[in-house]
Amino acid sequence: MIYRFLFNLFFKGMDPEAAHHLVVRGLRLASTLGLLRPRKSQKTFRVMGLQFDNRFGMAAGFDKNAELVRPLYALGFGHVEIGTVTPRPQLGNPKPRMFRIPEHDALINRMGFNNDGAEVIAERLAKLRASGARLPIIGVNIGKNKDTAADQAASDYELATKKLARHADYLVVNVSSPNTPGLRDLQQVEALRPILKATLDNAQGKPVLLKLSPDLANEDLMGILDLVSELKLAGVIAANTTISRNLEANPELLAQAGGLSGPVLADRSLEMLHLIRKRLSAEFCVISVGGITTEAQLRERVAAGADLVQAYTGFVYHGPLWPRRMASAS
Image (cartoon, rainbow, N blue to C red; front, top):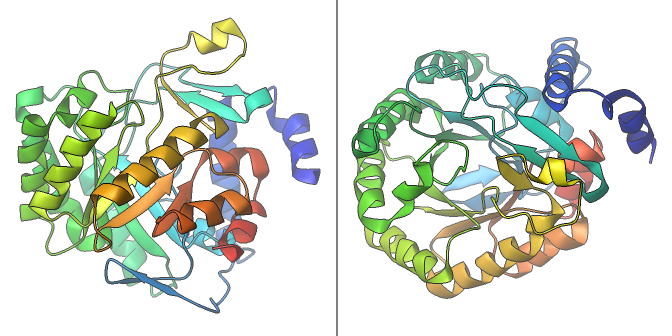
């Protein structure tokens, strides 16, 4: 309640991206001053051969440039997925490119993979690893540059993997963001195959997962899951943001292009989790993300077969004490 009051007081009228950068600076400062420190976990979970403090993690998109790994860990996230990282630095789409729908605790974003590029982020991760600090499990979400042609996409994923794999605990192939033109077309099985193979061949033994779109038809989802099984990926993440607008809100906001996130995604995300678990055996990791805001929802995802659970939008609306509450329920 206190956080919501402060959110409405300070952030409601502020441009969402400007507010995000303010929070980033605050978290980095608090971490530097030693005000944020991770607590020792009372129990751990082993997934993909990795030891997690808890099942709850920060989804990709919040920490695009590996600048917040330590403070997010201190807030309670058991793993932090950075990115999406592209081979070359990228400014992303023109601003404004993030919009709040507070009556639904939702966001629309069309950021467009804005990031510092694989080389800079690899150096940042290497420095973080060398610091000797306690760290969460770090996932690295990779994508192609906007100006890379679709038929050359596999080379972008290969380049990003070569630069980043050694610094990652696991890798995620992102072909499901709605904010890079033509990217989602790469979810077609024959277009996806060379991308996944290029990533696997250069992953240095690190687990590789595929992030899925909630807008996939179930039949197409099944075909992708069969490819995941055939190529022996570590698993999948379901799901990314949606281009659907299945909620009542300001028509001008709903008309904004970009991916919608928040509780509106919960039903489809849970449906996908059930479908995936029926198709993939227990040896495959499934990370469930989309619309999760309560401890009960987190437990529901785990009961439905999720090995790990992630969130992003919930953190924006529920504040810095929320991750630890969620983690304790996992």
